Amino acid sequence: MIKSFILPIKELIKGLYTVFKNGFKKRVTLEYPEKKKLLNNNFRGKINYIKENCIKCGICQNVCPLISCIKIDTDFSIDLSQCIFCGNCVENCPKNALYFTKEYELAVNNKEKLILKEDN
Image 1: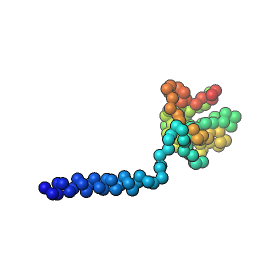
Image 2: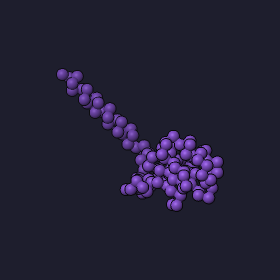
Image 3: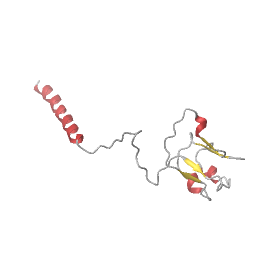
Image 4: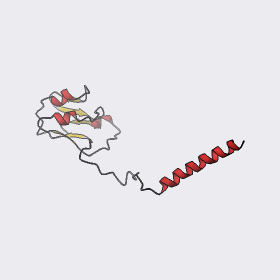
């Protein structure tokens, strides 16, 4: 009977200890919309490209692990809704036409807005 009384109190004290131990540490969480985290140079955000550098060689399309993400026929397009941001296309582009931006807020109402076309 005493054991059933002491065990919950012991667990309560252990929980309060954890709260007080972590309650006075520096906060890790940011207030997101107002404050944004500083990103390092290796961050893989939205893929963009320089139209003038693109020679439409098709290397980016061949190294992409997804079949229908990058399309090159008469014009160039990347479907960012399918992209896994692996970086193969950026690393293998011979003319450095593709690059990562630091833009990571890609939420849109229409999926068509995530298709990066040559005329955009």
